[in-house]
Image 1: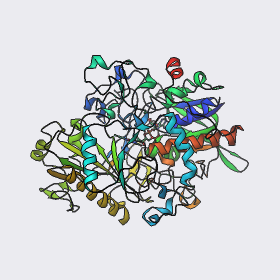
Image 2 (image 1 turned 135 degrees about the vertical axis):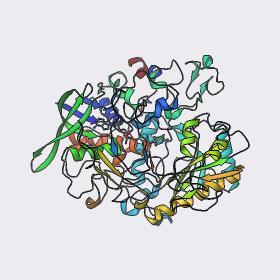
Image 3 (image 1 turned 90 degrees about the vertical axis):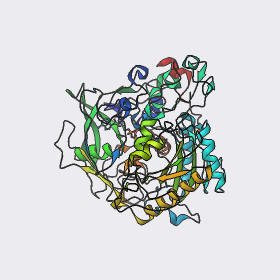
Image 4 (image 1 turned 30 degrees about the vertical axis):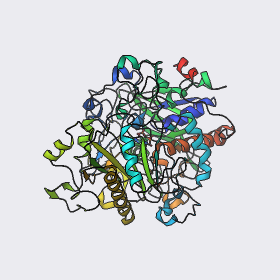
Length: 587
Ligand SMILES: Cc1cc2nc3c(=O)[nH]c(=O)nc-3n(C[C@H](O)[C@H](O)[C@H](O)COP(=O)(O)OP(=O)(O)OC[C@H]3O[C@@H](n4cnc5c(N)ncnc54)[C@H](O)[C@@H]3O)c2cc1C
């Protein structure tokens, strides 16, 4: 019998694996997708090779790219952007690691309190999470982003509208700032040359400014895996978990098994309670079925697959909240066209942001050309000036909302995206019970059980959520205007589901939550959730992963204390950064 089995090696699962392996527990980490263990051989910078949903190396699917992706039933005109394999969706992520706004937590009493989704607040205070934020920030590590031209243009715009700059971790007022990023700052030749020969580690360390954050970070060439620039978990927490005996006194290596898809969580009845006892999973292209037992099971399969596995396992769902309350920051996209070269395709993809606590945030994002064209072709409004699906809006941007018609798109892309500056709108969206993950009744059952059905569309938004998004889109357009854009487009994105939160939410109210205030399932003891689905809400808009990782750290301590008789460590010890040379040497 294992001490702990963790399901999913994405943003959250590896945190628990690392923390508990470092405490000497016997940890098994099961990941349904590919190992991604030889990135320089397995990945490329060709966008279709990476992103194609059917066969891209970062699709949602098994390791064997000859096999089909894992299917989901999803809303019409939507795109779910995740990745499977070691690292999960952090393979794509930009490393932006802001903390949540204070108003997302219980006990917040600021003057803007009513602007937040107070009915679904975190069941503890912001202050309580701070030591766990600090621990995760030191482990990854999180640093102030290295910036270039696109950030200068964005900051010019922010200053032109009178926003103040702020430099604290804790954002309390409308302001702009460099991102706090889980990307190592450039050192040596990195960021100073595009000559590949001069960018070898150790002459170059940290971010080389290649501009391909979303395609998995494998730079600088020659660096040990735990010193690749972007701190996706394949480069940070997973290397630490599988080498824990090398750097943690009393630590024990976690066992990582990939291509290992969990199809069932087992339970037993003990002392009148339902208790998790282990899992069944399929390996070797789904041919072999294995069963393992454990004292504790941690579900970290992401916001869509965690509820799917729960429901396919037939676990109890007494208040019907499993899968409900899915939030996604109701993203939107506002793009400015400039005469000047904005450097949009270079550097860390998103290194600057503006925050509007109570509403959400804006971040400047640079994309490689195919993604940039996609981003301007994906709208719920229809085609600008051609047809309108009844959602077209006027505001501080030029003309109606909508995707760019062909000629306008070609003109915008004339300089391969480098005359553009794009702003991502991150709305602090409300938890809505009808935005949810359930099981598809439409698709045939596959070897993993029923497919997930994702219900999340324009019709399921509160008036407050819609108003926050419009507010932010107007601010984005004003910033672009102030920065000197000659034309501004608001795309009104159709659901682009890439920040997912709260589908197995923790909460203080047992009637509207799946997890208690320690992230243990209310209906199944010894079963914890440690991915974005555990978040109580959408954090008010800030990017979710750091908060998931801080919360997963807190959950690790709870598990260690409650079921293994251990003592807490956060606040008492100094965290080892994931770049530690002992990790490199042991890999
Ligand atoms: C382009 C892009 C940019 C982003 N940028 C940022 C950013 O800058 N900052 C930020 O905070 N967030 C960002 N995100 C979001 C971020 O990636 C997610 O918040 C994070 O990865 C979520 O972690 P998770 O553990 O919930 O899920 P995931 O990372 O999706 O991990 C879940 C893992 O579980 C595995 N799995 C699923 N089902 C099973 C099963 N049954 N058995 C075994 N394994 C299973 C999956 O294969 C996957 O590896 C970005 C996302 C995208 C797409």
